[in-house]
Length: 338
Length: 171
Image (cartoon, rainbow over all chains, first blue to last red; front, top):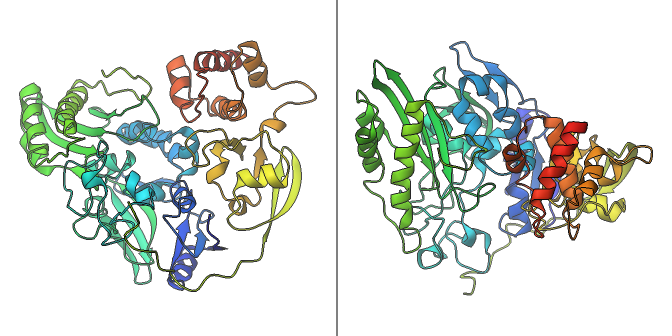
């Protein structure tokens, strides 16, 4: 690993001040992605500012019945937090589908959002990668693309964001609280991550020197009708080929409200409002779900090695919506798709 | 394929920082260490404290061989900077046995022959101790899911699951 300076932040204001004072410093919390990337010479910060001791570890109910989750709450604590398990089981289920328990014990909530959108070529410094070295080219376009994007990609980058948690946060209309040199602001989750366009080196819309302080969930958690289904090459501890977060509010045998987002298919967690709108007012059956899935994948584009993902995503979407409608969510430790 | 462009230094080379003094409790023993910022907890344990029970497998958080308990929770020590654990309580495989008696998980691994080459075993055992403390795994399926961060290339998984089930009954 490269040499770097190390300092601890004493509070959020100090963290912002410290990072603004250095041209290539980075915050470190759990470090599960950053240290790994530093070991491979992909990330090369000259200073790490340790934010892991900041008092951002509380999960609190908000005045409007939602939840305010401190950015440093470990992923495992969040997954098993009583309020999350009770009111947002979709979030709990998704966290438990990601990484390993050791990594979930280390990784922070804010860090989960800030893990890099990435692929094997991003890690391989012997190959061109526009995300790692803007303008050098995309090796995946003509390389191995089994894991890569089928939606929202550009000629510059076809990597996907691997988070499971984020797929559910975008579906649930979460908000990201950040602080920076210009003060605090709130970013709707939908606007937090970016599509690659011709600037794939930027994963998020955070401004320079900003820090995530909390994630806010609105009151509605869809605890009755939800499912998170993750399809992957191994039964556990692997990134998704395709994952689907589905949440429904049913009333009088019809869908009053639907939420639908996919992971493993795009540079950012992929929510499809048009498909949600098409489900509204419908009877929750296979016909409605198939139509929603078609809308999700209307503009899908595969590459030679990941063409299969389009049909996989279609079927996974229908399956997950069916599980949600029946109230039989996919259990994280049951490897048989229900 | 050759790198398209050589990477330019971001700025002047940074001076090598002073080593930083940290105090950690390792297997019950208060320890003071001076470490460079980039020293991982794994390297500090193995190379500085001579606790070589904790293994370096992939060194990228993917195999679990370096699993130790920090403040009672299992983590991978290869992706952990030692300097960030200043003040922490660390337990490695060497610290599990008490008064000459093996930890129930260690004994269960022997009883069930839950290893072949043994390289992953310290990580498997520390991970299993963490799993028992979490109390979330009840069924064999849940054990398998929550132990998925520990890879065994010999394929001793059925015996590992059986060993953990035995330890669950005893602890």
